[in-house]
Image (cartoon, rainbow, N blue to C red; front, side):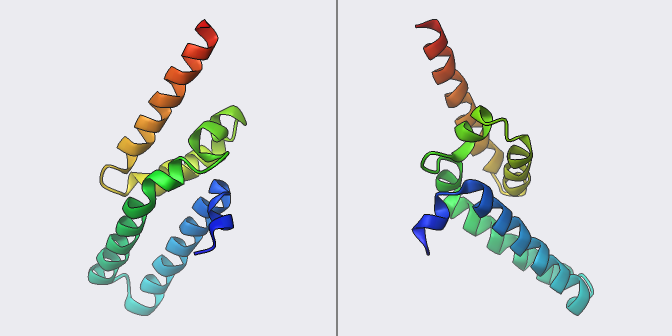
Length: 110
């Protein structure tokens, strides 16, 4: 995998969502929305996201904190949509958000 591409979480998340939509359309058109194919696709994306979840949330100079700082609410929404279908995906996002808020609070107090 091209590591430079992983440094841009916005593009990474968008590529994953585009890929998921592409294969959702293939299953709809070619397999008449067959549940077995849908389940296999969902399982594959869940595995990939779970395997890479921490990296996606904490990408260098980016990730969740950068999205907050730069007011990238659409990107936050895409990240949420990407993780919500994954077991414990939103827990990872919540933990990262909580950590960011605590760190920000500490900086404001000092």
